[in-house]
Length: 251
Image (cartoon, rainbow, N blue to C red; front, side, top):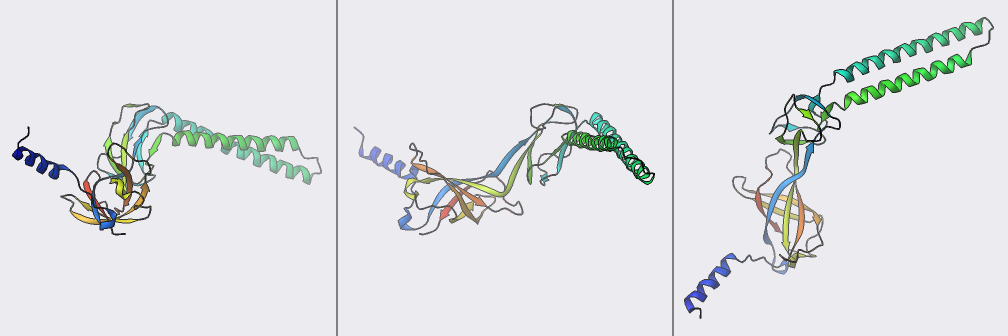
């Protein structure tokens, strides 16, 4: 048999370790949460090639469209130059044909419609070849798809880029707050609802967040459901990865 003292110790232990969530009917409640990046992107290259330069490093802030890295592109640059020269030459030929037709009309001779159409088509094809060459050259420049921070850098100049990412980016404005709310709150938390997020040290403070996702699928093992909130972070003062507590206001 378990002694009275032992039963008391077990009961006290149960009281200490068992989480208690306030019911929505009793007012506000604090629920544990985690601050995460809104988006994490592993950025690679759409084409294989030798890495020529990496413009950013871990911890750098980047803007959408900013150049992150470049691949060796001497061949592509030569193809662009060749296509440009061809396009310019075809434009000159087209101009010459037009001038000749004008002179022919002045002299009363029939214009050469076939020559004009051929010149026009050659010029159009030359322009398309130039566009294609520029597009292939553009693939050798890797740009940031988001505004955020470089969380990891995987490659250095001189390495061969295949299917591996070059850098990993994290979007931290806004931040994403992940919450597993107790079942008693199901139906009480809705998209657009405001809540207060309290961060752990060293970033102590309370911030306002807004509910963006309420998952209606229940985790039967824990008796919780997932809630996601959007936490504005315009000056990047709040780092991702912090533990926090979220308080939903009274109904």
